[in-house]
Length: 179
Image 1 (cartoon, rainbow, N blue to C red):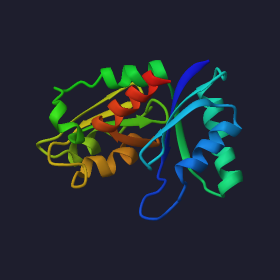
Image 2 (tube, rainbow, N blue to C red; image 1 turned 90 degrees about the vertical axis):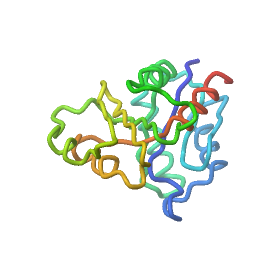
Image 3 (cartoon, rainbow, N blue to C red; image 1 turned 60 degrees about the vertical axis):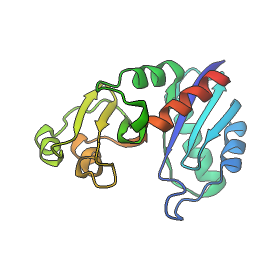
Image 4 (cartoon, rainbow, N blue to C red; image 1 turned 120 degrees about the vertical axis):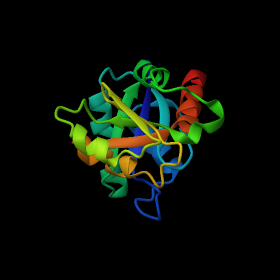
C-alpha cells in the first residue's frame, strides 16, 4: 500500500465549510484508506491506500465529501515521494526558526501560461518566489497575511492552489514517516 497526502482547501476557515477531522477520517476510511492521520483543522491528511492513481483518490475524496457532508471542497492528493520532493526542493535558504514565512503552494497541475509580469508586480521587495513543476514556492519574510503575491498568485498562475507553510509541511512529512 502506498502512502499519500491529501490537502483539502478552504475547510474550517472562518466558520465556513466546516468538516470536523473525525468526520474526515470516517470519509477516508469509507474510500478504503488506512493508517489515517490528520494534522490541524485545515485539512491535512496522511494515509495509506491500495489505489495507484492520485487523481482517482482525489475524485473519490471530493465526491464522498460532497455526498456525505454536502460540501464542495477542492482536494489535492500527492504521493509520499511527490510531497517529500516538493518540501526538499524549497529553492531559498531555509531558516528552521522562521518556518511560518516559507511557503509551498501546491498546484492542481503545472501552470501552462502563468502571468509572470503580474506575479512580478504583486511581489514585494522582500519576497522571493519560484514555480517548479506543480509547486509555487514563496518566501514571505513580512508574513503571508500582508502578501499581495500570496493573495494573487493563484489567479496569475491560472491553476488551483493550496498553500502550506514550512512548519505544517514538516509536520506532515513526519506524519508520513510514522504510518
